[in-house]
Image (tube, rainbow, N blue to C red):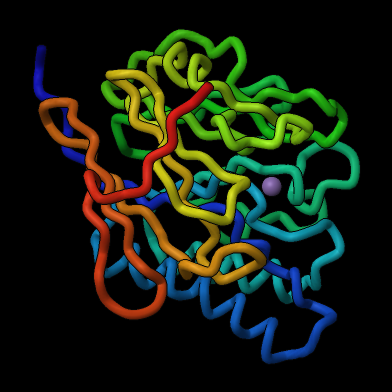
Amino acid sequence: MAAKPRLRLLHTSDVHLGAYDSSGESMRRELEDGFRRVIDIGLREGVDFMLVAGDFFDNARVREETMTFAAEQIARLERPVVIAPGNHDHVGPGSVYDRVDLPALAQNLQIMRQPMGETVAVDGLEVEVWGRSHTEQLFDFMPFEGPPPRGDAPWQIGIGHGHFIHPRALMHHSFHIREQHLVESQRDYVALGHWEQMTRVAAGESVVAAYSGAPEGLGGNQAGGHVLVVDLLEDGEVRITAHPLEGEGSLAHDDLPYLRGL
Ligand SMILES: [Mn+2]
């Protein structure tokens, strides 16, 4: 097998920009600073592209200046960025992405807007990203059910937003992601969102899958926020490093929390 191009990916999710738009300036600033640091880490680590696995915005009524702030930060990375919308920033009727044309403000940005799923070729890189955006129309939506076969690019990434079903999962939650779905995706890496906590999840022998967790300490994220730097190596190996948003001490691949599925 020919060697693959070495690529470095920045994975974040659940930024919830605008969550505190009506809660006062200091909380609002804290959330924005968190996303600014995500971009800073991407620049420091020299990533080739960035993925946002849903809930980038908290709701469809965020201030317009929150949206232009988001576009400015994305543009600052100067590398391709793909957003796969989650339940808080869903596509379809009433979508936050209908309000401001973000890709016009940040020309390195692509937003996955096809509810039936789509594969995005990342500009200038030998990588394709497949995902299915939330519409908030289907209560039993399963983001990774029935994945299409791998595409032609050497690197195939999956992206999606929902609950990985593990033995401690609350089954009444919606947007189920099963280990079997991740195995069947045959993607090299699957970027997950919806959980505040950073963790790898079980996805069979040949698929690496992880939640980046929220960058900021939103409810339940006492461990503090992380962003994931994912190295896609020439021999096909995928290695994650979790970088804390505050302070030192990154976590290497084998030291990341790891959840088994049902
Ligand atoms: Mn969510």
